[in-house]
Structures are given as structure tokens and as C-alpha cells.
Amino acid sequence: MWYLLPLPIKHEYMDAEQQLRVLLNDTRLAEDLKNIAQKVLNHQRITFNEGVTLYQKGELSYLGVLANYIRQERHGDNTYFNRNFHIEPTNLCVYDCKFCSYSRLIKERSEGWEYTMEDMLNIVKRYDNEPVTEVHIVGGVLPQYDMAFYQQLFSAIKAHRPELHVKALTPVEYHYIFKKAKIDYATGMRLMKESGLESMPGGGAEIFHPEVRDQIAKDKCTGDQWLQIHEEWHKLGMRSNATMLYGHIEEYWHRVDHMEQLRQLQDRTGGFQTFIPLKFRNKDNQMSNVAETSVIEDLRNYAIARIYLDNFDHIKAYWAMISRTTAQLSLNFGVDDIDGTLDDTTKIYSMAGAEEQTPGMSTKELVELIKHVGRHPIERDTLYNVVTDYMDYQFADEVKPQFYKLPVIN
Ligand code: SF4
Image (cartoon, rainbow, N blue to C red):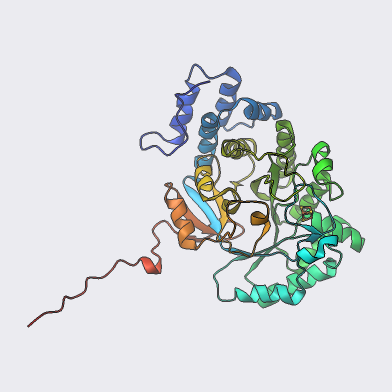
């Protein structure tokens, strides 16, 4: 136990590298942790066993110093967000994942919704005059949402608004619809691309290892199938994200195994952009007896992800899931992206018991949230091209008041 290490907060007098060097000179630091810190300073990859060591022995301040060093090296203070909206076609699902607070099984249809093609296109049209750059489509799995349906949906969105980036569905849906259409993954992903799909979100990954996956997400695509579908997508020259659902029944080594498999695939394809750790929430699901992780554990987990996934550009925290203040804190623990200004078009977080029950934030609020912790807000598009640099941006209603001429009394 050591108490004098610098916290990974922005210092006036010590930058991220200096903090790491101070840590390396601390004689109380255990040898294995010192070796890992040295590797980070040397830009060397850590091993599987070292990943497990970080989870078992790495205290928050130690992990933060390492993760913040990597974050500063890669992105400086830049902190990204995007402007998107969500379409969730349905919350009915043929699967029955134990952690899912969102899905209503088909037998509970009265509590669910099923959007038609027209409903979804009307949602897209609601944003016609809004400066959004992305539509994020993901929801439950139902037979009527098949290959033909999604091909038609993606084509119709692109025909209506060609510049809107379509980020849609996960391998859970793709595995199901390709199987139903009797086509292999490579053909299926190619057809989706031809219909207008531009990138894939990271969902459905949960924990890859079957020891855990079989207990919490039986029947849906396996970890290997999830990875294969992303690999086929990357082979088409396209990008995607990856998630990990943590803090339930898994052990630390399952998390490292999960990240190891992502790291290996990324070495082969380079197609992943962002890793998004997702905290297990226990409201209204079949695992409500499982306690949630603490904020400390959440921050440790972000930091370890930043250290382990040396070939991922970005680590994202969903502010709507972990609260605004934890999202601010996470920026000192390896996170460089806090998602978007989503409005209440998504119910995934609130139904799982997230702090934000009506998750919406204006661009101005999001920019201020980032600036308040000394970071540099940048609106990005889905592929991390800069849309607007908000560092010195003046919002319309912030224009300094003018001096008015006082009325002159003659
Ligand atoms: S997590 Fe996804 S696949 Fe599993 S039950 Fe919920 S909506 Fe269906």
C-alpha cells in the first residue's frame, strides 16, 4: 500500500510523463507493478498475466498514472463526442440474456414496441434540420427484422439523407439474420455494406469466454462468431467498435481474456476504432441479486483497458450509463471519448437502472462538462474526423452583452 503517489489529475507543475517517472522511482512499489509501469513508459505491450496482475494488485492512483500517460501520448487533452440519434426497432427479443433489462420476451408483447419501416423513417426525418452526423440502430432480435428488412431500411435512410452515417446492428442480429437467410458471414456483411451500412457498433460482445457467456447470454452468437463477423466486416475495409460487459459473474481473467481476443483480432485487421467497457446494471433483470461494481472499480477497469489495448485508438465511456461526474473523472483514467449528445431516443441505459433516466445533453452542456475538467472538447463524426473544435467556440447565447447607450436626459 502506498499513499504518496501522484493522482492522475491535471497538475500545473507535473505532466503525465513526470507523474509516471515519479511513480517508477517510488521504492515502495512492488516489482511486478514497476515492471509494468516501465513497459508502459517504453511503449511495450503487457502480457496476459500482467493484465491479470493489474486487476489484482493495481490501485486506482497507480493505474490512473499509467492510463493517463497513454491517453496524453495519444490524444493530449482532446476529448471526443458526437451528435447522433438512436433508433431501437424493437425491445422484443427471441433471446433471453440474463443481464438484459431492456428486452421483453415475445410472450410479454404488451410491454414492448415494434417499429415499422415507416416508423423508423419518420424518426430519421424528425432530425432533418438537426446537425446530427450519425444514426445508431440497435435493438432486440425478431424474425420479421430480417435481411430484406434491414437492406431496405439502410437503403431508404441513405436515399433520404446520404451524408448521415449509418451505424447499425451487432453480430447478435447479423448472426441471426444471416443464418435465416442461409448465407455466410462474408456474403452477409458485403450485402449490408452495399445497402448502406457504414459501421458496426460494439454491442453483443458481453464476455467472450464460454464459461461466462453460456450462463448470461446462452443461445445468441458465441464469442468466436462475434469476432468472425467483425473480422469479415474489417476485411471489407470497414470500421467497428467493441464492448465488454463487466462487473457481474466474471472473474478478472475473463476480462483479460476478452481484451486479449480483441487485441489479437485488431493486430490482424486494424478495423476497431473504440473500446467501450459497459458496466453491468442490476435493475429489472434476472441478475438483480448481483451487486454492481463501485465507481472505483469502474475507473480501474477503464484504466486497465487503456493499458492493455495498446492497438485501440480510443476508449469510450457512455456518460448516460455511468453519470456525468463519473464520465468527467474517467477522462483521467484513459478515456478520451464520452459518446454523444443523444436525446431520449435510447432507452437501453435508463431501463437498466442508469443514473440518467432521461439521457439528453445539449452540445453546450457537453462541451462545458469536458471543459470543466480541463480537457479540450472536439465534436467528431463516426470515423473520428473533426467536425468542430469547441475549445474557443462561442455559442450563440453566450455572446457577451453589448454596452448600450444610456438614455440621455436633456
Ligand atoms: S441483450 Fe440483446 S440479445 Fe440479449 S435479450 Fe437483450 S436485446 Fe436480446
